[in-house]
Image: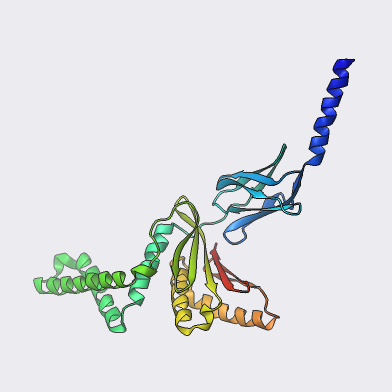
Length: 286
C-alpha cells in the first residue's frame, strides 16, 4: 500500500509540473520573412525557449507568454527543435533559393563599382582595352607584330585603369569572402549592407538606409549607385527595379504612409521594401 501511495503522489507531482508548462507555435511550417524565418509561439512556466537548427542554436526570452525565434533560411528544409522546460516541439522551415555564390556576386559588384568610378573617356579606353585583350587572345597566331604590340599596349592600359579604379573604390567594395551566418558586409554613406550566407552561398541581402539619406542628394546618389550595382550583381535589371521602386514608393506614401510596399520582381529576383520611423529596409532574395 505504501508503494502505491508514494507512487501515486510522485505521478501527481509530475502531472502538476507538466500542467504548469505550456509550449505551442502559431504554425507547423514557416517560410521566409526577409533573411530569416520568424517562428512565433506561446509558452508558460518557463523564462526562455531554447532552439536547435541546422543554421544554429540559441534561446530566446518569453515575454508576456509569447516568444519569437528568428532562424536564417538555408537552401534545404530545416527541422527546428524547440524546448521549454520538459516540453519539446518541432516545426519546419521551408528551404529558400540562393542568389548564387557570394564570392562571385561580390567580385562582380566590385568590378562594376570600379568601372563606374571612371570618367566616360576612361570607360571608353577600358572598352578598347577589353576588346584588344580578347582579340589578342583569340587571333594572336594570325596577327602581325605591330598589331600584337598595339593590342598589348591597349590591354596594359586596361590593367592600369582597373588597378587605379579598384584602389580608388576600396572603401566601398564588398569583402569577397564571408562566413556562414547573417552579418554586416559593408557600411558606406550611412547605408548598411547585410548578407545571409550559408556555406558560401548568398541566401539574401538586406540594405538598411536611414531616411535622412533619402533627403540628401549626394548620399541618395551614392545609395542608388550601390543598390543598382547589387541588383545587377545578383542578376536583376537595375533600371526595372528602380522604375518599380519609385512608382510603388509614391503609391505607398499616398496610402497613409504605408510601412510596406508590394514585392518587386526582376529576373526571378525579389525585392521587398519596408519602412520604420527612421530607416528604409530593402530585402533581396529569390
